[in-house]
Length: 221
Image (cartoon, rainbow, N blue to C red; front, side):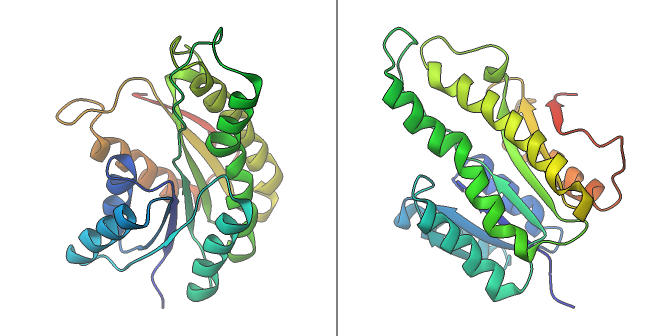
């Protein structure tokens, strides 16, 4: 029996790394997708040194063809994808009064719309009990004034995750976003390793989730 596989889109040294370690400790093989090849290789190598079977593929989340190809490559190699974690956030330090419509749409493409590309690419390799997970933020409810597009991204992402869950639940595939109600920081309630465990528990619940499944999960609860 082959190991389960998680594909992490927007994998970085913070929460993405923590999620990779958490799922790896549960016996998952880990597949990483991010834009920067050098940083991606460094993260992948560090996970391999921990004994976690890890592969990686560089792709910009705003490049739909490249992102889909990366996800499909992992799915084709393993034959299945059991969890997909969508983690990107695009930071443009501008208020709503300064942000252009074009900049907003560009940020939405990477921080929200790209989950559709990733999910649709992963879907042929997913089966009942698989799960789509996304990193949400308090900014969906309380916009960060100086980074106006971030709240719009997270609000749109939350909506898309709920829509994906409604569309795929008949196939036994569930989707949820974890709304992080604070700022990531080590040695606090918002330490990445602690939040990563929430994603692991959601993946476990997805296999038996019924009507009580939450598509929007607050952290802390």
